[in-house]
Each structure stands twice: as structure tokens, then as C-alpha cells.
Image 1 (spheres, one colour):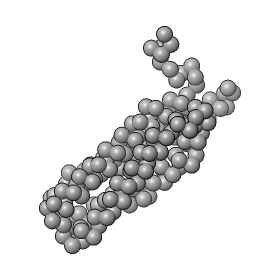
Image 2 (cartoon, rainbow, N blue to C red):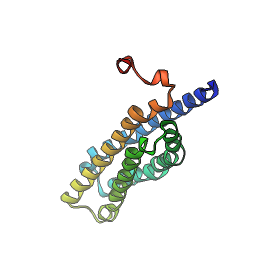
Image 3 (spheres, rainbow, N blue to C red):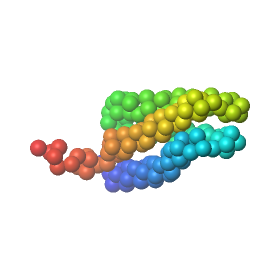
Image 4 (cartoon, rainbow, N blue to C red):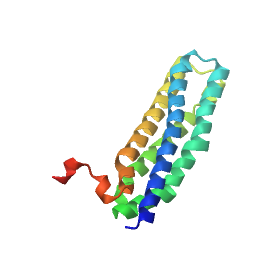
Length: 160
């Protein structure tokens, strides 16, 4: 392996880690909105949930698309199997479906949600938070190590 390829993988890993740090701020925002939802006015609720949905469309979905179109094929090639990223691709489909579920609440918000509708919206926001947070952790734990040099990838307990 050339040092250029090794350097490229380090740059890619650094970029993805930076992207994930930025995603954490959005994930934390989802959590904050979910916690505050019952105390918000209808207008505030609409604005805050709308902000989450704008973040999903403007930040999260483009990040997932980049991973699917560029990063995952690179990792699959490195691992020499399409199975390396299969679970994470499934995560992305779940995240997109959950975001659509939240988006479907928009009409309910505009007409003043019932207590039950607010609880359901809140649950859906917490579910989105959990899905995205778990996805980021899985990518960092299982995919990013595949970008490291073979000798660096495995800890000493694997060398027995």
C-alpha cells in the first residue's frame, strides 16, 4: 500500500469524523425539541419541528447520500465485500422513514395538536434521535476502522 493511499484514507476518516461531530449538534437539537415540545405554543412547535426537518433535508440527507454514493463503495472495496456497509445502508432507510413520519405531523401541528398527537410527535422525534445517534456510533465503530492500515486496524487483543 502506498503512503498516498494511506494518507488518503486518513484524510477521509478525518473528514467523516468532522462531519459526524457536526451531526451531533443536530442530533442534540432533535433531543432538545422533543424535550420541549409539550411546553411550546403551536407556532413555536411548528417552527422548532420545521427546523428539525430542514436540518434533516439540508444536512443529514446530503451526508447520507455522500456516504452511500462515495464512502460506502470505497469501504466495500477495501473490505472486499458489499456486506461491510449493508447494515448502515439499512440504518439510512430507517432514518429517512422516521423523518418522513415526523414530516407527516406537520398538518397536525398547524391545527393545534391534541395531547396524544404531541406525545406521538415527541416519541417520533426521540426515535429519530436514537436512530441517527446509533448510526453515527456504528459507522465510527465498525466502518471507519476499515479505512485504517491493516496493522493499525486491529488492537493487540485480536493478535493472539
